Image (cartoon, rainbow, N blue to C red; front, side):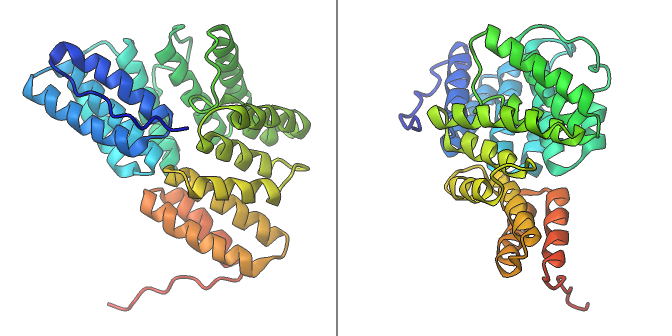
Length: 308
């Protein structure tokens, strides 16, 4: 259930931290429109009060909210603004959290080399803090996207251990199981992947926003020998009603690809056509290209540019 009660606006500079924490909680509950608007309020207030660290934190949070909404270019810009405003210590909690958010945005756009640049100097041991945990999760995702499943699994299982120790294991915040399951598929360990993502599906069904369940079902649907199209279809239906447009685009691409493999090509083309459109709107060239290639494979006609 979403938390719809408005967050009381900040009364003064000292109250900005409370306001941003409450806004982050709204974002974790998928009240993304509200959270995005609250970030604008915080940016305006922090600017008027010349509260530099709070202004950087507000831009950092808006980058995270924008990414979840599928506004990837805007999220990248907000992340860059926040980075310019932060202090000189790249290891403080705010800096680590921002780095995690920026890495995640670049991975969503398909800019794996750009994500790698952000991780220069951060490939070794990380502190044991919530912000460092977010960076470890983002780093695990990077390793998976870069074709290094062993390193991905090391980071993602470490996330799971630390989240369990903190009693903070919520698939709506850091979905380490589904990320690790995707890495396990890359190693051929499909049975382990199926068990892991099934656990995340179970957790997400019991609690958390619908987008967490949709994400877990999407990964469950691509594990060989798993529920396949059934899970992917449920993921699409859940994410269609969610504010997470990029997650929805990912589910459409996976469902369309599975339908094409099952020789249900007219359905596949309809799904993939929408996948191309939404991935493009989100600003993810990599996902749009993948969806377009799958659409053509399913018998769709390539987009013809008008002559100039």
